[in-house]
Amino acid sequence: MNFNQMNHPPMDPAVNIQLQEEFEKAQEEVMTKLRDTTPEHVKLQVYGFYKQAQIGDCNGPVPANQREADKYQAWIQHRGMPKVQAMQAYCKLAKEIQG
Image 1 (cartoon, one colour):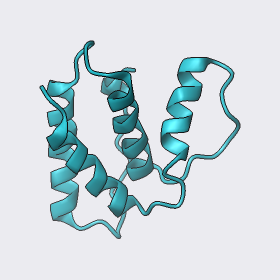
Image 2 (cartoon, helix red, strand yellow):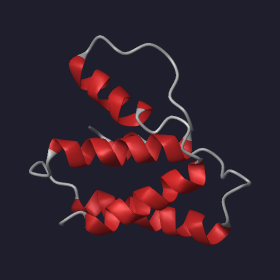
Image 3 (spheres, one colour):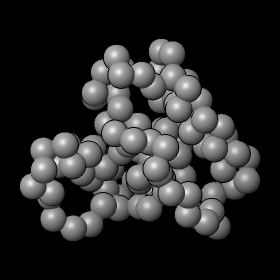
């Protein structure tokens, strides 16, 4: 999973600036903490919360490739979660990851 290639869409007006700054800081923190030895389920949690926070609900068919299907499942499990809540969950998870 290449977290360096994540796009940064414009900020959602429902998100306050303080949370946006905390979210951006958490992204940097995650990038320094994730390792090859980080459990795959943790990487997928990070991915799922990130995508929900940045894009919102996952749409489209389940990919045929197992790796992409795992990422899809990590994201779709947050369907219906508001972006603000996903950002908060991402920030909390970033603090819990052992680096």
